[in-house]
Length: 292
Ligand SMILES: NC(=O)c1ccc[n+]([C@@H]2O[C@H](COP(=O)([O-])OP(=O)(O)OC[C@H]3O[C@@H](n4cnc5c(N)ncnc54)[C@H](OP(=O)(O)O)[C@@H]3O)[C@@H](O)[C@H]2O)c1
Image 1 (cartoon, rainbow, N blue to C red):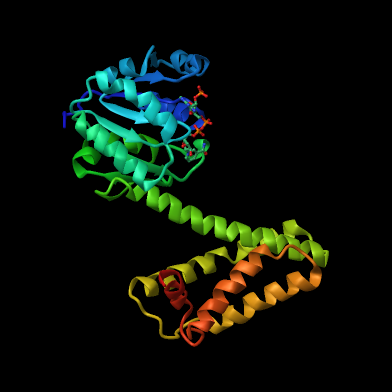
Image 2 (image 1 turned 90 degrees about the vertical axis):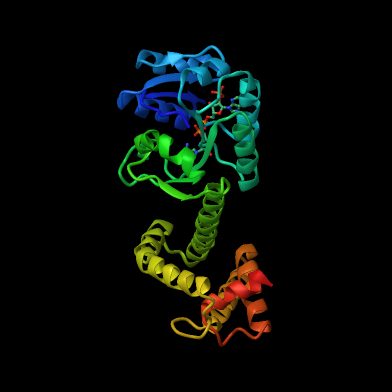
């Protein structure tokens, strides 16, 4: 990789996130070249001191670290295709567009064939939360690309976390954490219907639920450790408790005549665990249902 002594970067994509990244780089004294499909979004960046490239090729030629942040990989790939004519040698492409592990691996192969390093990143924060010490930013890709790009990444998040050399790891973490969040959110929305049916204010219920999230977090860490170590002997929470609780949630939905899609799935999964003879094991044994 080139020695990136010169603080120069290019940002391709000036949506809400890309524009924020470009502003953070400018604030840290980087020479920043920007490009966006709709040219109007470049205007405030130009006023803040960025150079506006007429084409993606021009942007790639101007920066040492090339940051991509657009809607999806299809857009990113279409923008990048003509840059095969640019000078990519010794540069690093930092792809912060959300995507799948397979898309990240394909783009890494593309960048490396042109002589560039590649990093894939998952941003788990809103634009206004970027640039803070606690901003969650997960990065994967070769160490040889991580090292020269680190100063740029530290502009986006005080302590970006390198997950490993596999380019797809950041997307995997993104999907896995989103899966956890969406599972919780669907449970929350079903809970809101239980509360509406009971005539209890949903905002108050939201407060009660968030009040238990830190102790619930400790419990998730504990169960995660058990799954990691393949330990399923009963210690904290026998799976049978969840078999019964999820059956009660389903029964109440049917009695109340509220939507039962979520408890149908939930109770169905726990019933399957019980049918596999896991009821008398720790909750961590649920992973055996999903591995089967
Ligand atoms: N915003 C967040 O809170 C957040 C948080 C974490 C991760 N992310 C990720 O960051 C990425 C960008 O998000 P954003 O919030 O900046 O989105 P956004 O405000 O909707 O901006 C989308 C960007 O993609 C460009 N784009 C879309 N389709 C295109 C195409 N076919 N060809 C060329 N450019 C195209 C848009 O260009 P035009 O201006 O020309 O339309 C714009 O620059 C996404 O992958 C998102 O998942 C966002």
